[in-house]
Structure formats: C-alpha cells, structure tokens
Image (tube, rainbow over all chains, first blue to last red; front, side, top):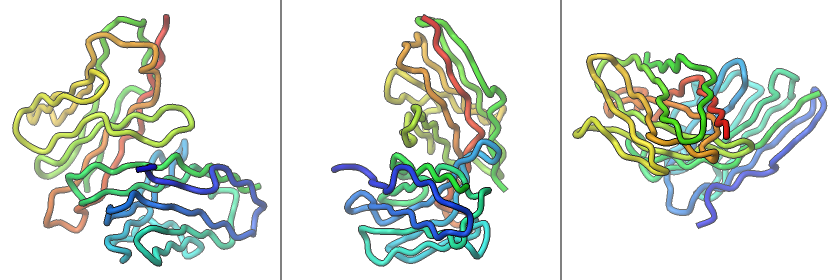
Length: 114
Length: 117
C-alpha cells in the first residue's frame, strides 16, 4: 500500500483565503485522524472519524475549521477564512481500529498563511 | 485528563553511545503507551507500543521501552545509537476503552535527538 497520502505538501496563502487540505487513508482503515503540529502547542488532535462519521471534533479550534469524509478513501480539512496563526503542519493519520491499533501518519501539509 | 511529559527538549549523543529518552504520563489507570519517531519533513512512524503484559517492549530499529507503573514512566532506550537515529521522538498516551477519550492519542512535546559522529 502507498500509505497515507496528503496533498498538497506545501501551501502558501494569504490571510482571508480558503484553504483545503486533502487526505487519502490507507485502504481498509476505518479510522481517520487530523492533527496539527506547531512549535508552541506541539501535536494536537483536531478531529477523528470512524467509518466516515465524525466522532470527536472537540479539538477543532474554531468554526473557521471544518472537516469532511464523504467516503472511505477521502477526507478534507478546510479553513475559511485562513489566518496567520493557522500556519502549521497538518497531519492526517489512519488506523484499522482505534485505541490499540497503530496510527499511520501521512507526510503532512505545511501551511503558511501570510 | 491524560497528559504526557517529555522532560528533555534536546539530547545530543555520540554515535555508538547508549540512549535513554524520558517519558512520564498522567492517567487514572494504565494507559496505552506509544513511542513515535519523526524525521525532518516526514510524518510520524511508530517505534513501539505497550498495552499490557511484559513491561519491556521491543520495537523497530533496535529500540526498546520499559513501562514502570510506580514511576508513571515509559522511557525509550537504545544500546548503541546510529547517525540515522537523529530525529524527533514523541511519546504518546492513549485512553482505555469505555471512556469518552478512547481512540485519542495525547502526545508529549517531543525530544530532538542529535547524533555526533
């Protein structure tokens, strides 16, 4: 398997613009996680899905952030409007079962909001 | 709430030397424990995990970790470090089934390892 695929790898945008990050989980995995990594706050879980259904979005920082998983092989994280403080690396991860099972991480999307 | 502390932000060792990275956790019971490694520009890769049983866990790349309940610790060790081990290492705790946090991983702040030749 190709592993978790994220696109784009790098995104530079201006404040106020809409940003969409994409993730393709490993085939057969039924859990998908979105994380954000910053120097100040470390690695934070934003939201996770089970069988395409959002289970816990308590980590989503604001209403500007939204995530969807329309099918088992695709998820998006959208920021609208974007702000400079959203600059971070965003990771997607997937696992077969939650809890004990290994989460496999994608390479991340480095977002810079000017 | 669960939490993880990695006391060392940055560690430097010489190639061939032994390594120990510290991790302390806070949780109401024995949680699931993980160590991940992140190379520059890459995602996180699992080194090893502990759920129950033998408190000494073997992982990939020659790493091992020991769970000590009395110290709430899960330190990562390697007897002889290679230059390719230079990376950032994250300890994480996962909640047990039955709670509202089941499935979530809480990560420590990470320890950056530099290896001198």
